[in-house]
Length: 131
Image (cartoon, rainbow, N blue to C red; front, side):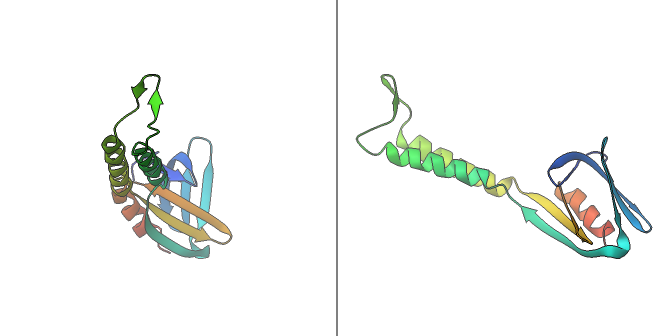
């Protein structure tokens, strides 16, 4: 595992280490130890950020507003023509589909660890996290 590249519950810089009866997740300031015998589930799933879709929706609404008589402007200049806004919305929708990460969720007792990172690393984490 490449050190310090995983995100654990939104915090960055964690390293995954599998020991015989323990999964150790550690960063510079935090250590989390999950006993293997209390693991209930290990889930592997792709994750996408909805912020891309919200930005695409905003671009689409601005594109629709430029089709009206009240065209958005900054001073004497129009902000942009309608097709630029729709092109931006399409590009942001493409970014939503292309910028997917993979998450591995490990539930152990009452603790839930959500690890995020590149797909290759998450494949390794998923394989090593099995009880």
